[in-house]
Length: 532
Image 1 (cartoon, helix red, strand yellow):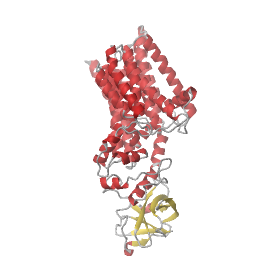
Image 2 (cartoon, one colour):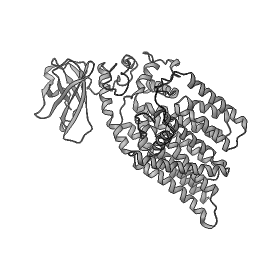
Image 3 (cartoon, helix red, strand yellow):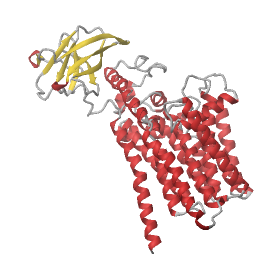
Image 4 (cartoon, helix red, strand yellow):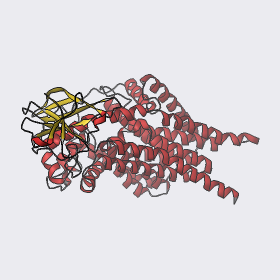
C-alpha cells in the first residue's frame, strides 16, 4: 500500500511538472499575433473559395515539396471556428504537442523493465523537450506547427498501435503521418525498425509495406513545387544534421550545436547497438522513435544543407526533440536491462536515468528564450501587414512579405469569410478607418507629445508612416488622416519602456500631407501629434 501511494504521488508530480512547459508555451502563444504567416496565405488562396467552402481537390497538392493534408484541414476548420486566428491555431498546436507527451507516456507505460520513477522522470523530461523554448516557431507561427507536429503525433500513435499488436491500424496512422508533412515519410522505416527489434511476425510487415508504397507513389506522382538545388555531400549532410540535433541545447552557436549533436548521436548509436545485440525487445518502440527523428532530420538536411537556411532554425526542433527523447529512454532501458545489479549497484540505475533527464531538460528550460523574443519582435511586420490588408493594398505586394512570392490575391476571400483581420473586434483604428473625422473632434496635442519621423513608399498604393509618441498619452489607437480628415491608415505602437514609444503604420499613398492622431480615453476627440 505504501509503494502504491508513493507511485501515485510520483505520477501526480510528473503530470504537474510536465504541465509547466506546456502552460508556459500556451502563454507565449497568447502573447502572439492573430495574423497568420508566410505559406499559409498561398495555401488558403488555393484551398478556400470566396464563400468559405473547401476545394477538396487541393488537399493533396504539395507545398514546398511537402504534403500538408492535415495542416490544410486544420487551417480550414480554424477559419470556420476562429476566424483563421494564429493564436487559436497555436493553442490547437499546443494541444497536439500535449497529446504527443501523453502518447510518449503510454509508450513508457508499455515499456517492460522500467519502474514508476523512471517513467515519471522520462515523461517530465519529454515535456520539456517537446515544449522547448527554442522550438517556439512551431507554436507562435502555428501554420508551421500544424504541419510538423501532427506528423510527429501520428508516428507515435503508429508505434503505440504496433506495440499493442495492431499492425493495420498502425499503418493507417502511418499514412496519416505521411500526408501531414514530408518528414512524416520517416514513419515507415521507424515502424520497420520497431517491428524487427520486437520480432513481430512477417505478416505484420505487410500493412506497412502497403503504406510505404502508397506514400512513395504519392511523392512520385504529385506536383511537389520542388526547387532545383544542389544536393549535399555525405559530409555536408551529416554536419547539417548534427547541428540541427544540437540546436535544441545550443541554439546560438553552430559549433556548440555540432558538438552537442555529435555527443547525442554517439550516445544514441552506442546504446542502440547494445540493446539490439542483447535483443532487448522493450527498446523496440524507442528505436522506432529515434529512427523517425533521425529520418526527419536527414530529409531536412538533404533538402536544406546546401542552401542559406540555418540548421539552427527553430522549426527543426520537432524531429530533433524526438531523437533526444528516444536517447533518454533508451539509456534508461539499457541501464535497467543490461547493467548488473550486485549489492547496491541497482540504486545507480535511477540515478543515471535522473541525471540524463536533468542534463537534457534543465538546459532546455533555460535556453532558447532569445528565440522566443526574436519571434515576438518579428510580429511588428505582421501588424503592418494586417493594416495593409484592411486597406486593401496588400495583395500582390512583396514589401511586407520579404523573401516570398508576392502576397496572393486573398483579400476578397478574407473579407467574405470574416477571416482575421476582417473581424468585429479589430481595433487598430478605433473603428475609424475610411471615415471622415469632423474638424471639431481634432485637437493639437501638447507640444512634444509626438512626431512623424518618416513617410516613405512601402508598397504599391501604400506608404510607411513612422515616428514616436510620448508614453504618458497612453493612446488607444494611432491613426493617419489626409488633409480632408479622412482616416487613410493606422499604426501600431512598439512594445517599449522608453519615454518616447516608436510607432509604425501603413497609409494609402498619394493622400498627403499626412497627419498622425491618437485616440485617448476621451473618445470624442483625437489629438494630432504631427503632420508631414
